Length: 77
Image 1 (cartoon, rainbow, N blue to C red):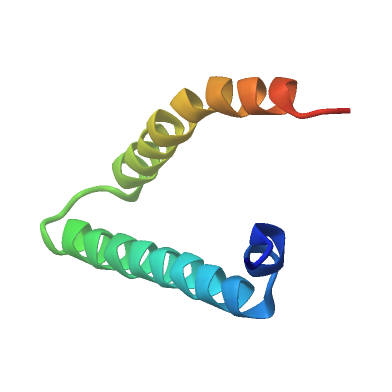
Image 2: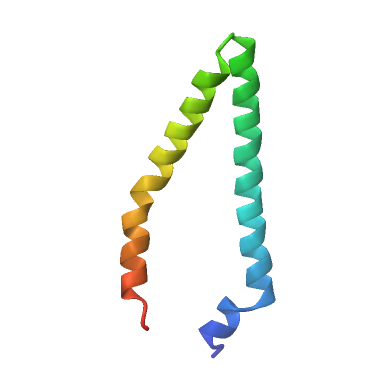
């Protein structure tokens, strides 16, 4: 039986995970760029769009902080 850590730490797994992460980041950047351009087309002010981006980013990141804290508390020292 193959040791699960050998599979989890293999270069193939690193490449697969990195590919997915890069794909998600590129997709997010492309959608944000399209939304920014569309906002300018319909006449939105830059200040309004920047505040919307900031509030959306905070609304997305803040709820995951308690999960990260609990994960760090469960890690062995």
